[in-house]
Length: 112
Length: 112
Image (cartoon, rainbow over all chains, first blue to last red; front, side):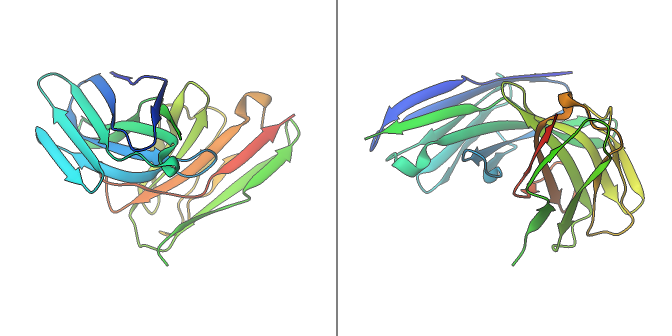
């Protein structure tokens, strides 16, 4: 089975830094994705971590600790357009098949 | 342009009236998947397909059917829709299992 936890909602101010956490308990872990989803739109890929450590991509960074079952997405220099939901998704390996399991998402509201 | 398309984007229907939501991708992806997204529940996988004529159930398959006769198309069929199938539906494709998925724009279905 799997269990993925993210905060339901977060607020932050334009220009600030925000960290969105994701904890997971799953068998056969084989990587973790972060997706961004604006209201009513499709999720879009942000990052992928399979090894422990930090992956940096512009204003966004993602960290993974496999031993702790923990990841975070770090957003720097927040902009109004960053107001969206952020979905943590775990790749679960099960009897030779890999499956993407999504958390319920964190809604981020960026205010001026 | 590489993309996943879905039709219709919005649909209001009545209980028991069969409907099909189409999904098509132009990236020659082998793996395709259907998700539904409900408030507080996140994205849940309905069905997936690893290649032509190869499909299998996801986490919430009851009340749905799929087919994969061609690589590019993966329609979702609701033989007898019920109000609990009111949801936002996303089709996704990827080159394989457990890798970045590309999502369609979504289909908002309301069953009365």
